[in-house]
Image 1: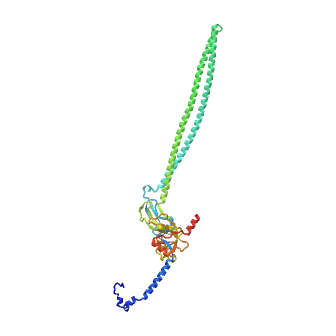
Image 2: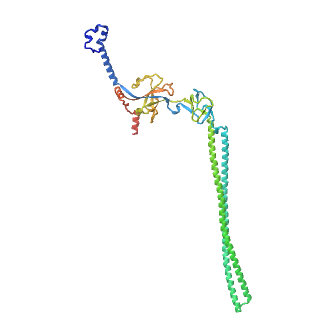
Length: 451
């Protein structure tokens, strides 16, 4: 009752006479309720001082520990057209099994004998390279022969020059002798003529000396002609040496030019051979790509390009495959505020979707249906969802994870931190403070070893 009126009804009427009044105004209700409140307060006070394990929760999904064990798609590195399927969805395949056969869609690869014809071109060009190599050998031999011949011709010309110089020297000496004879004949003629004038010599003696003088003059002129001829022979010998050098220089230069041309042609042919070898290898490898093979054993999940005759581009996804052998892991995401609390090797509890569980986040010993895991890696770069990725692996020291887990199913994670009183945890959450920063014993020991 509100007791608003100045004249309470209880003063005029005895309400305990009525059945409802007896039940509402009984004094024992207050005693039981006060006991209940006192007991609840004591229990709440005790609970506030109970230990509570701080934790960092996150949402993620089941994945694999190794990248090559995760679901993948199979692509073709070349464009093509689907000709035949060899598998169906859900089928198990081994590594190297044929999944489908494709055909070419590019015009430059339509020739079915493309590899054989490329091999013929390669063989012809290889023969051309060998021919140029033989031509280079022949020109090198020709250059060596021209060098030897030039040296012989030069020695021959030098011998002729030496002979001409010796002859010139001999003619010079003979000229001096003729000049001496001329002087003697001139002196004898003058003495004989003087003696003839004095009457001591006859006229025939004078004529004889004049004849000898004329012969000496004739010999002098003849010897001078021989000397000039010898000088011309020396000049001709020197010119012959220069002519031989110029002639053989021209021949050697022409042969060297042919040699360089042959080498250039050989290099060009070798480059074409290398290109043809590259084309041959590419065509041979491309022929092997007409059959798309399974990269590893597993199950075919979904065919992304169905039908026959359907074309696709290079790198386009054709079929999905799930590897048969894999190690389970959980990929969870935590807030940037909680990343400093994540350390490799730290234990985490995982709750899988579809598996019954009762979770008390602060009392892990009372939780049911959660499984143990360890932190394997923590990303250093934020993900697109604004959180950091943490990779978890099963804890080998605890109960194994369920066998029926499928890749991609959801998971809830609880990273266990320090133990604090419940009142402190309530106060922290009311004020929006993060969990207490700490470092596990393994990290502390590693830091001490480093120091």
